[in-house]
Image 1 (cartoon, one colour):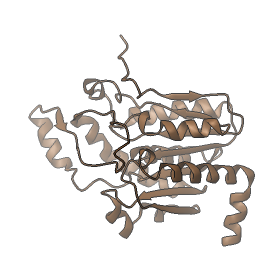
Image 2: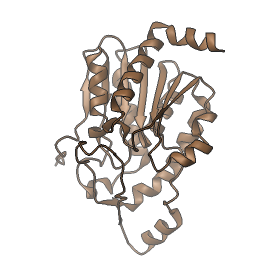
Image 3: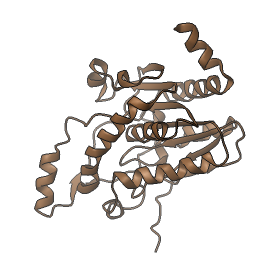
Image 4: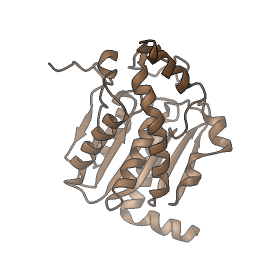
Length: 265
């Protein structure tokens, strides 16, 4: 029996685009809701777009309890292959944990991935995550923890987020290896990378002093979003994210981005 998807959380799959392929990934405990407008913007500009709903997300928390990081990577790989069958050039992007999935695809497929876009990338474990504590809970047969309910969007007009009030502990534990895999993938990303960092995000102070993208060997453009919190794609700076993302992709595919980077060097 298939599990119903919460309305608004559904995947995006648009195959008619002729300009190239764009793969976009949402974050852990999020859904495609957080990247839908971003995805549709690329589709309207003439790109084929895949934005999959990661396993266990946007359905029920019990469904999510049966998943782990490897399932999210497998889902991402399947979406990438759909684009790779039709396009020679693919851009991968993501928000939060989705950024880690994006860099893994870039490291795996350097022959086709020509650019990466990362919004508030997840490459370091949040300070409030305590793996030892969660391991002890699992030993007592505890399966769920209350999900963090802090502020992630500044704009009061933004829609209510589709997420769960509880988070299964086992999938959270698998994110420890996710961080390692994502961080290691950075050293293999040689294509241009566009990084967005929200200044109002809880992770900003840590990223400001020790940004994850210093480990990327390829050229990096970093944009600070002054008015947005973690989910910038739904926040005040969403137009900046969309506009600069599209310009970045168009410059890569036209060859202008390589020229600009050569001139800067």
